[in-house]
Length: 353
Image (cartoon, rainbow, N blue to C red; front, side):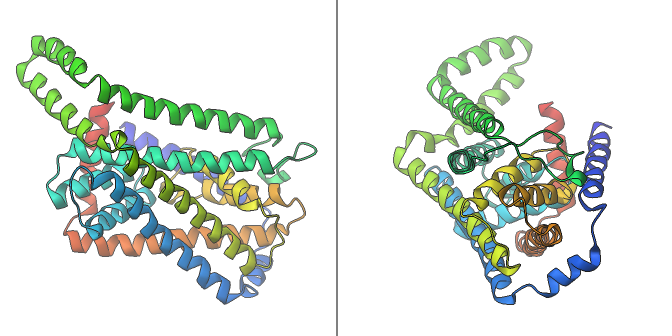
């Protein structure tokens, strides 16, 4: 029942965002912008997206392989299936699906694969934090900037340096909290296990044994946190990944002949990260477009709004289509069913809640 409510709320939010974003769109003008796009830059933008898929798996390999050796293409398939799940399933189930896929394909305990995913997300936050910091240093509007009238219902307040600074502080706190919690689990592992055995053992010895087994596998999956060398490699590749996102932005500007300042990719990626964190429908429909268009306007208030909307549509399709196609191919290689993975991820989330 709660899953259905989440789906309905997500569809409503996504629909409202799309309506506010495109209600005054001149679709004829948007089509003309698409027709005038430069094919060479579009191809480069697509290549940047495909390259980001490889870099993301490269980063994850530094987290997984110190614990258990997994061939690159098994990591790739698990990652792409998880991506596809994020785009086509409700409630952002992709990370659980990624862990389940690796568990099913390599017979690794699920608690361990979930730890791999958790550490990977932490290194991703590090890359995003750097993007926020560069935005904070470079984007200093002399006065508050407001979104155009048709975007005011998404966010009606001013975009200012203080707002960006608040986002940086929030992201820093989140990153420190995640890493701190993981380190506490590692350092106090034996103490936590003793408490768990004592408390759960009074309820059920079977439950206590299950909890001990799960916790031991989960902490084993976080062993990369004790290897500064591997953790530094994963963090460096995370920065490279976010750099590829910046290259994608630059290629898109050139494809639509947009005159943007050098810091525009950081502003857009920052705003996009905020908007796609909003609960929405599968495929990030609505929040994704709002983040791109809003970021373009913030970086260049004089931008042609139709060109901004055309770029947002292209960026979304360029992410959605390859992810779905490659995800389906990976499913066939792994001989898995996305419906079954979805049901299992839902059961796991329900148990957690």
